[in-house]
Structures are given as C-alpha cells and as structure tokens.
Image (tube, rainbow, N blue to C red):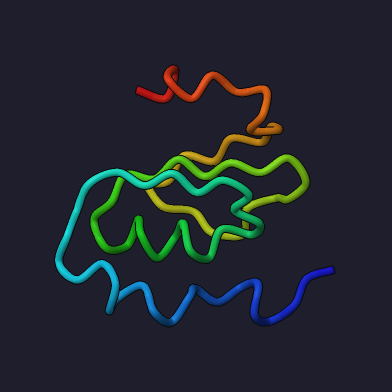
Length: 77
C-alpha cells in the first residue's frame, strides 16, 4: 500500500548528512524517496528492493529490483 509518507524522504537527512557527498546504499528502499534525496544532494545511490517499483528517477540513482540477501554487494563497486 502506497502512503504519502512512503513518498517523502526522512526529514532528518539534511541535519545528519550536512554537506557530505559520496555513495549511499539504500536496502529496502521502498518507493525510493530517501534514495532520490541522496541522489539530489550529490550522492551516487544504489537502491535495492524486491517488492517495490521505484517512483523517482535521477542520473545518480541505480535501482536494483532484487532481494538484497541474494545480491553480491561487492559487485556494486
């Protein structure tokens, strides 16, 4: 079931992350709101979920539809 809160990023990311950049791994990303926030703020993001279709697109966002327990995380580079 899609809810409004599942389409909004966590409101605390900006306070926690600040000006940092880098890579982010979002396991169980759901619809990808948090993944998109990180991508918009300069991170390269691998977003993984087995049950969802991501609702957001961004050049820095790589969505992988799979069960993360079966994924070789080292293959993400």
